Image (cartoon, rainbow, N blue to C red; front, side, top):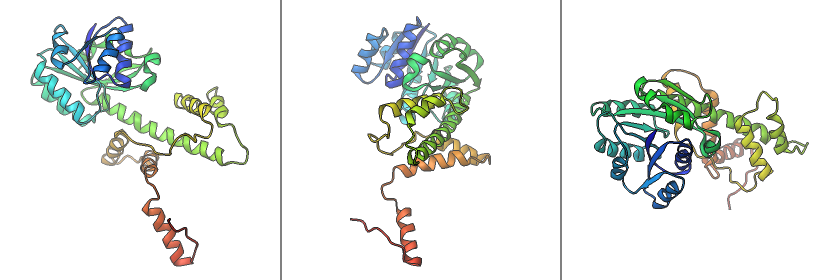
Amino acid sequence: MQIGFVGLGRMGLNMVTRLVRGGHAVVAYDRSADAVARADAAGAKGVSTLEALIEGLTAPRAIWVMVPSGDPTESTVASLSRLLSPGDTIVDGGNTNFHDDVRRAHTLEAKGIEYIDAGTSGGIWGLQEGYCLMVGGTVEACKRLEPIFLTLAPADGYLRVGEHGAGHYVKMIHNGIEYGMMQAYAEGFELMHASDYKVDLGSVAALWNHGSVVRSWLLELAARALAEDGDLSGLEGYTEDSGEGRWTLHEGIDRAVPMPVLTAALFTRFRSREDNPFSERMLAALRNQFGGHAVKKSS
């Protein structure tokens, strides 16, 4: 099948490569000429403009957008909507807020352009392992692009989960669950690290992936990281969030669904970015005021 691809970053280029290896004809665009050259070397047809991307495809066209969420995706979809024709399809594979998907789908529908939101999980390992795809859109549009989805996904790794927005909604909750799982692993391994037993954490992580009820791909990655750096001394304890955890928590609040694990995991990420936070200084000051407890003065 023929498809256009916009965005050739860490995931995008690997996805293009997987599609080419699967026998698809890919026309690829990125603002970076070096990224386009790498896509060309992988077997895609690299182009330097969105106009050239459109010209390189036969109608009805399908364009997969894999750029950062927010303004980059918004501007890319808007630009494509001015260039595409009725019957063409735009797929957003980034981490878009599902509310934006619903709005875009309605806007594009007026122009006769189909819109599909494809929640994509797999990270930098997707080239070898495949990408889990959670797809939202009309039945007809999703069916037409199934050859693409089935090539990108591993066996049983693709599912149309509902109408417009459903794909990114399910991916949002997927990422919220991921936050909680990662936090649970982090706390458990910290406790072992602090114990008197001098446990080989990398060996335990590897052990737990064989028959344990807590085995997972995340635990495989933990074993890999600990094998490379046993006490993780080469890293700073600073963790960003890309938005999906916040969106999931907002949805939980809107629907009165309690989410204590995600809340704690998300707020722990916020705390990881603070250096000598005010709240901790306030605690020290209060203990000193009511009980004369020792404090450490800043240098």
